[in-house]
Every structure is written in C-alpha cells, then in structure tokens.
Image 1 (tube, helix red, strand yellow):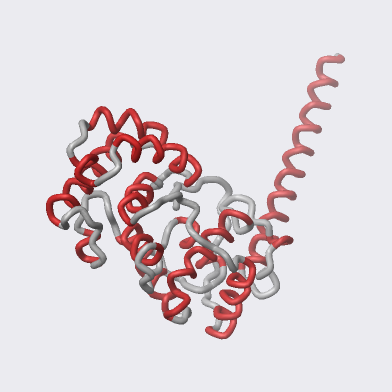
Image 2 (tube, helix red, strand yellow; image 1 turned 180 degrees about the vertical axis):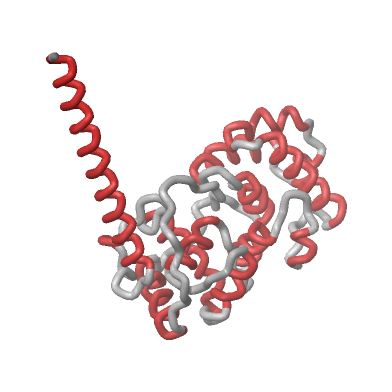
Length: 257
C-alpha cells in the first residue's frame, strides 16, 4: 500500500462535496468495478503484513513483494527480526527507500511484538499504533485485512480519489477518513479503501487521470475540472509553439542580412 509524494501538474480538487446520494452512487460504482479488490502486498500472517505495510511507505507494493521473501526467510518470526543487526536488515530492505529508518522501525516493532505481546501482533488499535513505525494507516490495514475489522485506511491514493470524487473536503488523512467512513456501510468498510486505491492506481492517477475510461466520470465533479485543465495546457502549449516559431523566423531573417 504505497504512499508516495505526488508531483507534477496540479489539478484542483472540487470546492464542494457532492450530495450523500451521489457519493454513495460513486462508491457503489467503484465497488462494482473492483469487486475482488484486496491488498497487493504478499503476506501469510499479521506479522508479515504489518512489516510489509511499514516497508511500503514511499515505495511500491511490487518492490516490497520482491524484498519481503528474503527478509522473512532470514527472520521468520518477530523474535528473530527483533534481535537482528540493523546493518543486516538495511542491506535487505535498501531498495524500498528510506531503508535506515525502515530497518530501525521494523526491528523495534518486531522486538516489541516479541517482548510485549507474546510474539503475536496485537488486535487493539492503540496497541498497534504504539508499535514503532506503525501509524494509523498501517494499523487500519492490518485490522481490516487480517483481522476483518471495520477499519478504513487512508493512503495517498485514497486521499486523492476521495477528494476528486467530492466525498470530502478534508485536508488531513483523519478528516478524509471520517467523511468517507460516514458514507460506507460498516460491513463494507474493510473493503472500501481497496476500491479507492485500485481506482487511483488504474484510472484516477495524480498527473494524468483517465476520465474518458472512468466509470464514475458522468457524476464525478472532477471530470469537468480535469477537462478544463487539459484545455488550458493545450492552449498554453500552442501559444508557446507560436512564440518559438516567430522567434525562429525572426532570427533567420536577421542572419540573412
């Protein structure tokens, strides 16, 4: 569940929320579009998922999935990882980015799980968030994916797509979470963030949203905004091209003299 810093051309978010009826219709469309949405991180236990989510910050799930088999082959249990030498763990997770901080955190989290929780990942949110390197998003992923709890995780894709759909005007992950949670039935909550994540990766991309392919476009408030931004860019590019052509012609005439 990668969290990345997105840069590039800015597409403004809608200034108004859509109605609850429209919001729920948008979410229903996404649910139908991604009926089998699950995490793309590979795991076989609450422990391996928790470590994978920590490693996925500012990194793709695909890269994490290439890294964790080696990590867990060497350190299969919390006690083993918790007593590992940091430089050894750093060497394994280096390709995931921010590897020194991540290695330090996963070692410390594993040690805490081993010493404070009998080697088992705690189910309680407060206990999860007390683990080194584990914030609200990571805790929510573990709670929803492996424990089946009604938890909603907000990563960069969920934050962006929720705001583009007009589900929220929130400016923080927690405020976005609160707004979206109010729209989703509790029994579907553990799946909802996967709908938004997959849509953000496949269609509602940060720099180049694919509105012409989007199943929500007819009721999404951002479709018109994206179209206006695209038109403005084309006009700006056209004006820049004319200026370049005029300048080039002028220079050619000057050289002819």
